[in-house]
Length: 450
Image (cartoon, rainbow, N blue to C red):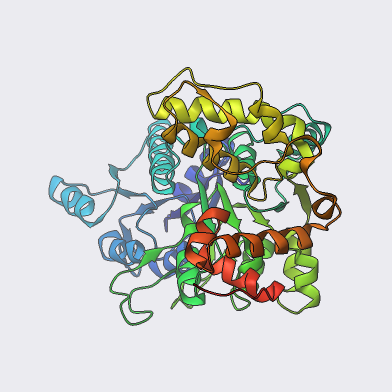
């Protein structure tokens, strides 16, 4: 991971080199400029974490420069140094957005302490913007279970924790891909930085672009203020893009540039910005097939597929279902003020026999529904409110189907049971209505509405 980057604007060589050498010894990456024009160009392209500037420069002063810097990025702290300080000047500088106003000669240890505090405050703000608070404690352990397949996934994930390469997480809907992405972040070297996530499915190109990259004021109708994109919010942290297979083809080359060059442009901006992120993406689709169908760029596929992890479906780890069910039930019951709830012994084998097309998400929903509807402290099979085949009751007709055939047959069955009501069927399947329409089209499922 890159070191904190500091931009120094100072036209006196002795002061400039003195500060630069001192900060580099303490582990910072430092760039220097000697004019306001050079500062503006470097502020955009270098993307510093903080800036130290002299008050008076040959082509202007810091008070004139500060508003222009804040237009580029208001989150980067600026420290002003001056040989002619006054209370009035200091007040004006703070009003314009400077974090500190120091008089020369500055004591370098004091400058270092101030810089460290400003960077720590900046890091805290980024975490708050990303909504990190409480997420780590709320995340379900993605490796809960004793099956060999989940143990293997755990071993693979631990091996790549410190890697900076993009990670592709594959798995069916509801298997816990986002939980694995969070685990990779909070157990990796960027754990103290921001974790931001976005689902690419169902977003228009315009909305996806502005959410991811941000936009400048006046970039389009309605852009009355500048907007910071998720890439900037996650600077030095992790970006998780779920359902990347649904990403608009026009956005894909811009994401590729971020991965390869660590640069991007806000919508309506003409200069690049630098960003340091770790990228994790996920999909339930076959990206290789999408590449062949010209729906996903091959160069982006090869970049995001550097490290691949596959989250197994519940039916592939049936021995883990009782443990998962008990764990999820404990959390659900505690949230509802009904601690101490258990699952009856006869219900657990039945849970293992069910196919769980919605995987962990469907299991959680079934348990939550059962807790709401049951008045007893023990959940029985009938409390689950759906038919679960047990033992040898699962017909050979269903056992011999491929995954795609199974999904097609199950969706058709649910649509029939819901009398063609797509909204109710989507709720039962625990997928967005738009996704259900896509599956109906893909599988060419016909049904009648009543």
